[in-house]
Image (cartoon, rainbow over all chains, first blue to last red):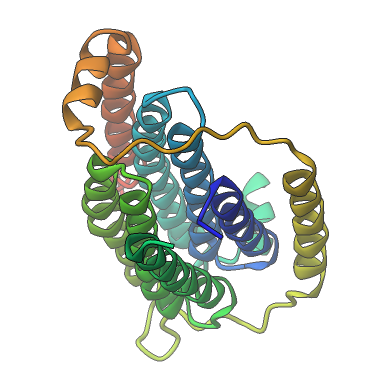
Amino acid sequence: MTVGLIHYLIVAAILFVLGLIAIISRRNAVGVLIGVELVLNAANLNFVAFSRYAERGIEGQIFVIFIILLAACEVAVALAIVINLFANLGAIDVDRAGRMKR
Amino acid sequence: MAGKEIAIIIVFYVTCGVVVISALIAVFARSVINAAFALFFTLCGMAGFYFLLSADFLAIVQIVVYAGGILVLLLFGILLTHRTLEELGIEKRTTYIAGTIAGLAFYLILIFIIAQGLWHQIPPKPMAPTTATIGRLLLTKYLLPFEISSVTLLAALIGSAYLVRRKEGK
């Protein structure tokens, strides 16, 4: 048995589900961000695996470059929001962020 | 089976172990600091997967941008949002039960779909450098997304700097 496309898809599924669990369960906002990073990495792994094992050539890797760039943007903006949340609430518990409405 | 294939299989499963175990720690660790450091090993393992998939340029980008940039940004975020050293990153007890059940259900669906799918595979080509091809594509076919993404990056950086600025009168 050689390592094929299926193996990479399964690893990506595990990473995606772990990221999903972190997004659902974490109450610390930075923990939620870590979950988002895991989900994005799972998507990246799928793109690279398909670009190697399917006939689409190298274009999947270009998608991954754009995803990494958007992840960097997302983390910068999200951390700015988290720091604002901390300045206003004194904590970064996402359950208490509903108070921002008032 | 050739020795090279056995080596690839061993490297794949070792990388798998590193990625999955460190991702488990990143999700279930109580301290967010520990989770961020575990995420470092996950990201490096992903770079290993990219090497195995003959995406050498992406592996380097992954290490430089993710492990070197995004992770440091996350650590800054953790350190800037805690008042004392004692409560550093320690979360209150979180209930993972509902999230884990939902995640496992979703995982079963994903595995079902992956097992059902008739994935069309071609025998992989021998490993070749990809940097020149990616650079040429980025400056010809994907020039417009490339330029748009640079503007997006600029907008995100200005926006985040604006969000965390000190308010006047405080």
